[in-house]
Length: 355
Image (cartoon, rainbow, N blue to C red; front, side, top):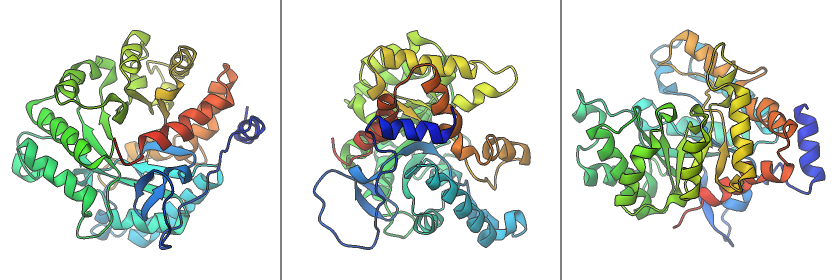
Protein backbone atom coordinates (compact mmCIF):
# COMPACT_ATOMS: atom_id res chain seq x y z
CA UNK A 1 0.00 0.00 0.00
CA UNK A 2 1.59 3.31 -1.04
CA UNK A 3 1.39 6.58 0.86
CA UNK A 4 -1.28 8.07 -1.41
CA UNK A 5 -3.55 5.08 -0.77
CA UNK A 6 -2.90 5.34 2.96
CA UNK A 7 -3.92 9.00 3.08
CA UNK A 8 -6.94 8.33 0.89
CA UNK A 9 -8.08 5.56 3.24
CA UNK A 10 -7.67 7.82 6.26
CA UNK A 11 -9.76 10.53 4.59
CA UNK A 12 -12.39 7.95 3.63
CA UNK A 13 -12.54 6.90 7.28
CA UNK A 14 -13.43 10.44 8.26
CA UNK A 15 -10.13 11.48 9.81
CA UNK A 16 -8.02 14.52 9.04
CA UNK A 17 -4.48 13.98 7.79
CA UNK A 18 -3.54 17.59 7.19
CA UNK A 19 -4.44 19.79 10.12
CA UNK A 20 -4.33 23.58 9.66
CA UNK A 21 -0.98 25.24 10.19
CA UNK A 22 0.06 27.76 12.82
CA UNK A 23 0.03 31.34 11.61
CA UNK A 24 2.83 33.05 13.45
CA UNK A 25 2.92 36.77 13.88
CA UNK A 26 -0.86 37.21 13.96
CA UNK A 27 -2.36 38.00 17.35
CA UNK A 28 -5.36 35.83 18.07
CA UNK A 29 -7.43 34.70 21.02
CA UNK A 30 -6.97 31.06 21.95
CA UNK A 31 -10.15 29.10 22.54
CA UNK A 32 -8.49 25.82 23.54
CA UNK A 33 -5.31 24.28 24.96
CA UNK A 34 -2.05 25.40 23.37
CA UNK A 35 1.37 23.96 22.56
CA UNK A 36 4.55 26.02 22.35
CA UNK A 37 6.20 26.21 18.92
CA UNK A 38 9.25 28.18 17.78
CA UNK A 39 6.85 30.72 16.24
CA UNK A 40 4.85 31.06 19.44
CA UNK A 41 1.92 29.28 21.05
CA UNK A 42 -0.57 27.49 18.82
CA UNK A 43 -3.79 25.70 19.65
CA UNK A 44 -3.16 21.97 19.83
CA UNK A 45 -6.02 21.43 17.40
CA UNK A 46 -3.76 23.03 14.77
CA UNK A 47 -0.81 20.67 15.24
CA UNK A 48 -2.18 18.06 12.83
CA UNK A 49 -0.07 15.04 11.89
CA UNK A 50 2.96 15.20 14.20
CA UNK A 51 6.37 13.53 14.23
CA UNK A 52 7.24 13.73 17.96
CA UNK A 53 10.91 12.65 17.96
CA UNK A 54 13.15 14.04 15.22
CA UNK A 55 16.33 16.07 14.73
CA UNK A 56 16.28 18.58 11.89
CA UNK A 57 20.03 19.08 12.29
CA UNK A 58 22.56 18.72 15.07
CA UNK A 59 24.80 21.77 15.36
CA UNK A 60 24.02 23.64 12.12
CA UNK A 61 25.94 26.55 13.68
CA UNK A 62 29.13 24.60 13.06
CA UNK A 63 28.62 25.17 9.34
CA UNK A 64 29.97 28.68 9.86
CA UNK A 65 33.25 27.14 10.96
CA UNK A 66 33.22 24.51 8.19
CA UNK A 67 31.74 26.53 5.30
CA UNK A 68 32.29 23.86 2.63
CA UNK A 69 30.01 21.38 4.37
CA UNK A 70 26.63 21.21 2.58
CA UNK A 71 27.27 24.56 0.92
CA UNK A 72 27.69 26.41 4.20
CA UNK A 73 24.85 27.67 6.37
CA UNK A 74 22.89 29.18 3.48
CA UNK A 75 23.21 26.05 1.36
CA UNK A 76 22.27 23.76 4.21
CA UNK A 77 19.26 25.89 5.13
CA UNK A 78 18.07 25.85 1.51
CA UNK A 79 18.42 22.07 1.38
CA UNK A 80 16.61 21.63 4.68
CA UNK A 81 13.67 23.77 3.53
CA UNK A 82 13.44 21.84 0.24
CA UNK A 83 13.26 18.56 2.14
CA UNK A 84 10.77 19.94 4.64
CA UNK A 85 8.55 20.99 1.76
CA UNK A 86 8.41 17.30 0.78
CA UNK A 87 7.58 16.41 4.37
CA UNK A 88 4.73 18.90 4.49
CA UNK A 89 3.46 17.71 1.10
CA UNK A 90 3.24 14.16 2.53
CA UNK A 91 0.62 15.31 5.05
CA UNK A 92 2.88 16.00 8.04
CA UNK A 93 2.18 19.28 9.84
CA UNK A 94 4.39 19.38 12.93
CA UNK A 95 7.90 18.20 13.80
CA UNK A 96 9.23 18.04 17.34
CA UNK A 97 12.99 18.63 17.36
CA UNK A 98 14.57 16.92 20.38
CA UNK A 99 18.04 18.38 19.86
CA UNK A 100 19.14 19.86 23.18
CA UNK A 101 21.68 22.62 23.80
CA UNK A 102 24.55 20.23 24.57
CA UNK A 103 24.41 18.58 21.14
CA UNK A 104 24.27 21.80 19.19
CA UNK A 105 20.67 23.00 19.09
CA UNK A 106 20.36 26.13 16.94
CA UNK A 107 17.10 27.82 17.89
CA UNK A 108 17.32 30.61 15.31
CA UNK A 109 17.80 28.03 12.57
CA UNK A 110 14.69 26.15 13.71
CA UNK A 111 12.65 29.34 13.63
CA UNK A 112 13.85 30.21 10.13
CA UNK A 113 13.06 26.83 8.62
CA UNK A 114 9.67 26.76 10.34
CA UNK A 115 8.82 30.11 8.78
CA UNK A 116 10.08 29.10 5.33
CA UNK A 117 8.58 25.60 5.23
CA UNK A 118 5.21 26.32 6.87
CA UNK A 119 5.73 23.43 9.31
CA UNK A 120 5.12 23.81 13.01
CA UNK A 121 8.34 23.16 14.96
CA UNK A 122 8.46 22.39 18.67
CA UNK A 123 11.91 22.88 20.21
CA UNK A 124 13.25 21.15 23.30
CA UNK A 125 15.10 22.05 26.41
CA UNK A 126 16.79 19.39 28.50
CA UNK A 127 20.07 17.49 28.39
CA UNK A 128 21.27 14.72 26.05
CA UNK A 129 24.67 13.80 27.50
CA UNK A 130 25.88 13.83 31.10
CA UNK A 131 29.63 13.15 30.81
CA UNK A 132 31.08 13.00 34.34
CA UNK A 133 34.53 14.16 33.26
CA UNK A 134 33.20 17.59 32.19
CA UNK A 135 30.41 18.38 34.66
CA UNK A 136 31.02 22.12 34.75
CA UNK A 137 31.21 22.43 30.97
CA UNK A 138 28.42 20.09 29.94
CA UNK A 139 25.88 21.02 32.59
CA UNK A 140 24.66 24.47 33.61
CA UNK A 141 24.54 23.18 37.19
CA UNK A 142 25.39 19.99 39.04
CA UNK A 143 22.35 20.19 41.29
CA UNK A 144 18.77 19.22 40.60
CA UNK A 145 17.53 22.69 41.45
CA UNK A 146 20.17 24.44 39.32
CA UNK A 147 19.53 22.31 36.25
CA UNK A 148 15.76 22.57 36.65
CA UNK A 149 16.10 26.35 36.80
CA UNK A 150 17.90 26.27 33.44
CA UNK A 151 15.19 24.10 31.85
CA UNK A 152 12.46 26.35 33.24
CA UNK A 153 14.18 29.48 31.91
CA UNK A 154 14.37 28.03 28.39
CA UNK A 155 10.69 27.11 28.61
CA UNK A 156 9.28 30.28 30.12
CA UNK A 157 11.72 33.04 29.14
CA UNK A 158 13.42 31.91 25.93
CA UNK A 159 16.47 30.18 24.50
CA UNK A 160 19.89 31.67 23.72
CA UNK A 161 18.94 35.32 24.26
CA UNK A 162 15.79 35.03 22.16
CA UNK A 163 12.11 34.90 23.02
CA UNK A 164 11.81 31.50 21.34
CA UNK A 165 10.63 29.03 23.97
CA UNK A 166 10.90 25.28 24.37
CA UNK A 167 7.72 23.22 24.24
CA UNK A 168 9.08 19.92 25.58
CA UNK A 169 11.82 18.62 27.88
CA UNK A 170 14.15 15.87 26.65
CA UNK A 171 16.40 13.85 28.97
CA UNK A 172 18.93 11.33 27.74
CA UNK A 173 19.68 8.17 29.71
CA UNK A 174 22.03 6.01 27.70
CA UNK A 175 22.33 2.80 29.71
CA UNK A 176 20.26 0.26 31.59
CA UNK A 177 20.31 2.35 34.76
CA UNK A 178 20.75 6.11 35.15
CA UNK A 179 24.20 7.27 36.17
CA UNK A 180 24.42 9.66 39.13
CA UNK A 181 24.47 12.67 36.78
CA UNK A 182 21.67 11.26 34.63
CA UNK A 183 19.52 10.86 37.72
CA UNK A 184 20.14 14.51 38.57
CA UNK A 185 19.07 15.39 35.03
CA UNK A 186 15.96 13.23 35.19
CA UNK A 187 14.86 14.66 38.52
CA UNK A 188 15.53 18.16 37.22
CA UNK A 189 13.50 17.44 34.09
CA UNK A 190 10.62 16.18 36.21
CA UNK A 191 10.72 19.30 38.36
CA UNK A 192 10.81 21.57 35.33
CA UNK A 193 7.93 19.70 33.68
CA UNK A 194 5.78 20.01 36.78
CA UNK A 195 6.65 23.71 37.11
CA UNK A 196 5.98 24.66 33.48
CA UNK A 197 3.33 22.20 32.32
CA UNK A 198 5.37 20.99 29.32
CA UNK A 199 5.84 17.22 28.88
CA UNK A 200 8.92 15.04 29.29
CA UNK A 201 10.45 12.70 26.70
CA UNK A 202 13.19 10.29 27.77
CA UNK A 203 15.85 8.72 25.55
CA UNK A 204 15.86 5.11 26.74
CA UNK A 205 17.93 2.01 26.05
CA UNK A 206 14.91 -0.23 25.63
CA UNK A 207 16.90 -3.33 24.70
CA UNK A 208 17.97 -3.37 28.37
CA UNK A 209 14.43 -2.56 29.61
CA UNK A 210 15.75 0.76 30.87
CA UNK A 211 12.35 2.33 31.59
CA UNK A 212 11.88 -0.14 34.43
CA UNK A 213 14.80 1.54 36.23
CA UNK A 214 13.47 5.04 35.58
CA UNK A 215 9.92 4.52 36.80
CA UNK A 216 10.91 4.45 40.52
CA UNK A 217 12.51 7.89 40.10
CA UNK A 218 9.49 9.25 38.25
CA UNK A 219 7.19 7.85 40.93
CA UNK A 220 9.35 9.20 43.74
CA UNK A 221 9.04 12.69 42.24
CA UNK A 222 5.28 12.34 41.78
CA UNK A 223 5.44 12.66 37.99
CA UNK A 224 2.19 12.12 36.10
CA UNK A 225 2.80 9.16 33.72
CA UNK A 226 0.56 10.78 31.10
CA UNK A 227 3.19 13.52 30.72
CA UNK A 228 6.08 11.11 30.03
CA UNK A 229 7.15 9.24 26.89
CA UNK A 230 9.79 6.51 26.90
CA UNK A 231 11.27 6.96 23.45
CA UNK A 232 13.04 4.34 21.29
CA UNK A 233 10.87 1.74 23.03
CA UNK A 234 10.52 -0.46 19.93
CA UNK A 235 14.18 -1.45 20.31
CA UNK A 236 12.88 -3.94 22.87
CA UNK A 237 10.42 -6.02 20.85
CA UNK A 238 9.07 -7.61 24.05
CA UNK A 239 5.42 -7.23 24.97
CA UNK A 240 6.09 -7.99 28.62
CA UNK A 241 8.21 -4.82 28.62
CA UNK A 242 5.71 -2.60 26.79
CA UNK A 243 2.50 -3.58 28.57
CA UNK A 244 3.45 -2.60 32.15
CA UNK A 245 4.54 0.81 30.86
CA UNK A 246 1.31 1.66 29.05
CA UNK A 247 -0.80 0.08 31.78
CA UNK A 248 0.75 2.55 34.23
CA UNK A 249 -0.21 5.39 31.85
CA UNK A 250 3.16 6.12 30.23
CA UNK A 251 3.56 6.70 26.50
CA UNK A 252 5.93 4.62 24.38
CA UNK A 253 7.74 6.20 21.45
CA UNK A 254 8.05 3.75 18.54
CA UNK A 255 10.64 5.73 16.61
CA UNK A 256 13.38 3.26 15.65
CA UNK A 257 11.18 1.04 13.49
CA UNK A 258 13.29 1.83 10.40
CA UNK A 259 16.30 0.25 12.09
CA UNK A 260 14.59 -3.10 11.74
CA UNK A 261 15.54 -2.99 8.05
CA UNK A 262 19.26 -3.03 8.81
CA UNK A 263 20.94 -6.36 7.94
CA UNK A 264 20.74 -8.70 10.90
CA UNK A 265 18.91 -6.12 13.01
CA UNK A 266 16.86 -7.24 15.98
CA UNK A 267 14.03 -6.72 16.47
CA UNK A 268 13.13 -6.87 12.79
CA UNK A 269 10.81 -4.40 11.09
CA UNK A 270 8.11 -7.08 11.10
CA UNK A 271 8.48 -7.67 14.85
CA UNK A 272 8.38 -3.97 15.63
CA UNK A 273 5.16 -3.30 13.73
CA UNK A 274 3.62 -6.48 15.14
CA UNK A 275 4.28 -5.19 18.67
CA UNK A 276 2.61 -1.88 17.78
CA UNK A 277 -0.45 -3.77 16.54
CA UNK A 278 -0.55 -5.98 19.65
CA UNK A 279 -0.50 -2.88 21.85
CA UNK A 280 -3.33 -1.41 19.79
CA UNK A 281 -5.31 -4.65 20.01
CA UNK A 282 -4.80 -4.57 23.78
CA UNK A 283 -6.49 -1.17 23.88
CA UNK A 284 -3.46 1.13 24.07
CA UNK A 285 -3.45 3.03 20.77
CA UNK A 286 -3.77 6.14 22.91
CA UNK A 287 -0.33 5.49 24.43
CA UNK A 288 1.76 5.12 21.24
CA UNK A 289 3.78 7.64 19.23
CA UNK A 290 5.14 7.02 15.74
CA UNK A 291 8.31 8.80 14.62
CA UNK A 292 11.81 8.15 13.21
CA UNK A 293 14.60 9.83 15.25
CA UNK A 294 16.15 11.01 11.97
CA UNK A 295 17.83 14.22 10.85
CA UNK A 296 18.76 16.09 7.70
CA UNK A 297 22.39 16.51 8.63
CA UNK A 298 24.69 16.61 11.61
CA UNK A 299 27.90 18.58 11.64
CA UNK A 300 29.23 16.41 14.46
CA UNK A 301 28.36 13.07 12.88
CA UNK A 302 30.66 10.88 10.74
CA UNK A 303 29.73 10.79 7.05
CA UNK A 304 28.55 7.15 7.24
CA UNK A 305 26.22 7.96 10.11
CA UNK A 306 24.91 11.06 8.36
CA UNK A 307 24.12 8.94 5.33
CA UNK A 308 22.29 6.33 7.41
CA UNK A 309 20.24 8.85 9.34
CA UNK A 310 19.34 11.20 6.50
CA UNK A 311 19.04 8.94 3.43
CA UNK A 312 17.56 5.76 4.83
CA UNK A 313 14.32 5.91 2.90
CA UNK A 314 14.17 7.75 -0.44
CA UNK A 315 13.31 10.42 -1.22
CA UNK A 316 14.07 11.38 2.38
CA UNK A 317 14.36 9.60 5.71
CA UNK A 318 11.83 11.95 7.27
CA UNK A 319 9.17 10.32 5.08
CA UNK A 320 9.64 6.84 6.53
CA UNK A 321 6.55 7.06 8.74
CA UNK A 322 4.20 7.93 5.89
CA UNK A 323 5.98 5.92 3.18
CA UNK A 324 6.68 2.62 4.98
CA UNK A 325 5.64 2.48 8.63
CA UNK A 326 1.98 3.43 8.27
CA UNK A 327 1.44 1.31 5.13
CA UNK A 328 3.08 -1.60 6.96
CA UNK A 329 0.78 -1.19 9.93
CA UNK A 330 -2.33 -0.94 7.79
CA UNK A 331 -1.36 -4.04 5.84
CA UNK A 332 -1.42 -6.06 9.08
CA UNK A 333 -4.81 -4.69 10.09
CA UNK A 334 -4.24 -1.41 11.95
CA UNK A 335 -7.17 0.89 11.18
CA UNK A 336 -7.03 4.42 9.81
CA UNK A 337 -8.78 5.48 13.01
CA UNK A 338 -5.91 4.15 15.14
CA UNK A 339 -3.32 5.69 12.82
CA UNK A 340 -5.04 9.04 13.35
CA UNK A 341 -5.04 8.50 17.10
CA UNK A 342 -1.29 7.81 17.20
CA UNK A 343 -0.22 10.57 14.80
CA UNK A 344 -2.70 13.38 15.53
CA UNK A 345 -4.66 12.85 18.74
CA UNK A 346 -1.85 11.58 20.97
CA UNK A 347 0.51 14.47 20.12
CA UNK A 348 -2.37 16.91 20.54
CA UNK A 349 -2.94 15.63 24.07
CA UNK A 350 0.72 15.23 25.02
CA UNK A 351 2.15 18.55 23.84
CA UNK A 352 -0.52 20.73 25.35
CA UNK A 353 0.80 23.06 28.04
CA UNK A 354 -0.70 22.10 31.39
CA UNK A 355 -1.04 19.24 33.83
